[in-house]
Length: 349
Image (tube, rainbow, N blue to C red; front, side):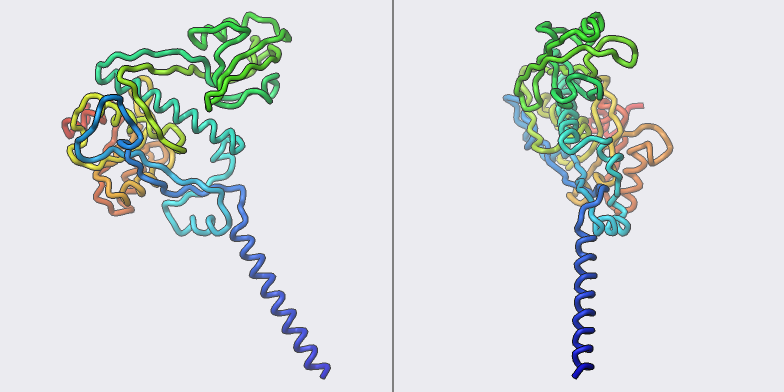
C-alpha cells in the first residue's frame, strides 16, 4: 500500500514539474524583452493619401510608399529572427535612441510632418508653380537636462514666441535669447503637434557653449502655403522615409503628367530641401513588401558608396536577388534623377 502511494506521489511530482516547465517556457516565449523586432510592413497607395485641390489623377498605375513593422520582441520573436533573413533584432538604444515610447512617437510624427512639408515644397518648385514658405517657429528636437522647461516642453513642440516676441527665423530667436541674462525669467509660447497652444515660464540657463539659452536643440518649422492646396493623410505612419514618394505623387497630380505609364511604382527615401534623396533604414524589408504586393519598380536612394551597409541601392539589389523578384530596382541620388527615369527611362548623369 505504501509503495502504491509513493508511486502516486512521484507521478504527481513529475506531472507538476512538467507543467511548471511548460508554464515557464510559455512565459519566457511570450514575455517581452528589451529588444525590438523589425520585419516587412505594408505597401500603401499614395493616391488615397494625397489630394491636390481641384486635381484628379486618372492615369493608370499607382505610386506606393513602403513601411517596416516594429514590435517589442519576445523570446519567440528573437528565435524567429534567426530563421528569417528579412527580420532584424535591435536593442532598445539602437531603435529609440534612449527615448520613451511617447517621445519616440512624437519624433516620428515630426519627421513625417517635415517630410510632407518638404515634399509639397519640392513638387511645386519642380512644377514651377507659386508657393510661399511661412515661418511658424522652431521645432523642439531635444531638451537639456538642466533646462527649466524640461518637464513642460515636449519633443516636436513648436515654440512660437519668447517673452511675447515673434521672430522670422530661428536665427533671430537664438540671437535674441543669447543677449538675455542667465537666471532671468522667460515666458515661451508653444504649440503641440496636436494643435493645442500652451504658455510656460522658466529661467534662462547657461549653455555648454557659454551662451544664454533655454536649453533646447531646435530646427526651423516652416509651412508651405500653396494654391492649389495639398492635403496629405498618412494615418499613423511616421518617419521621414516617404518624402520622395510623396513628392512624386504631388508632382504627378499637380502637373497631370503620366509618370507611371500604367506601372505600380513603390519606393523609399527622404526628400531634402536641395532635392537630394536621403538614405533610410530597413530597405531590405521595404523591398520585400513591395515585391509581395507586385510592384514593377522600386525607386531607392543611391549614396554612391560600395558598401551595402551605407548604400540603400546595393542593399535593395541584394534583397531583390534573395527574393528572386522581377521588380526592377532604380537607384536615384536626387528627385531630378527619379523624374528623369520616369519620363525618359534613363537617369541623368
